[in-house]
Length: 97
Image 1 (tube, helix red, strand yellow):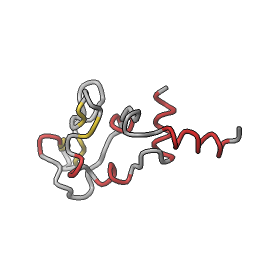
Image 2: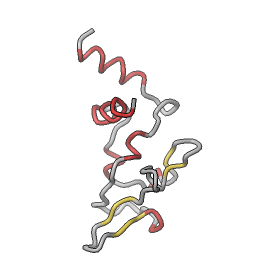
Image 3: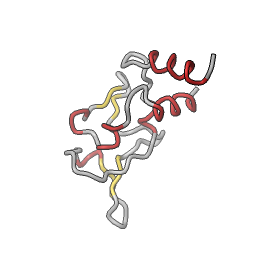
Image 4: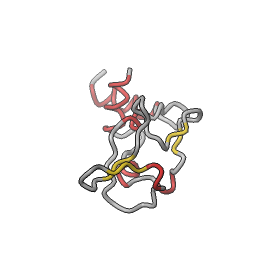
């Protein structure tokens, strides 16, 4: 099986039921206003903002029981652009195995 066939196979396997939220361990810079609630925002000493992460590295807005975003409608721009089954998603999934 070539790389394109393998990637296509993995893309069809990714769904909400098996996502595992690998991207929710990445650092998320807040560069646009989407309405993220303040309790999920971390501000650094220079005024930069990121999504807060828990001590174990998971995004603080992730519901750990369902592995779904609790602020989905107000999630950051980068989260909106990070497509489930896209090449960035598949790369993160591969790293988490």
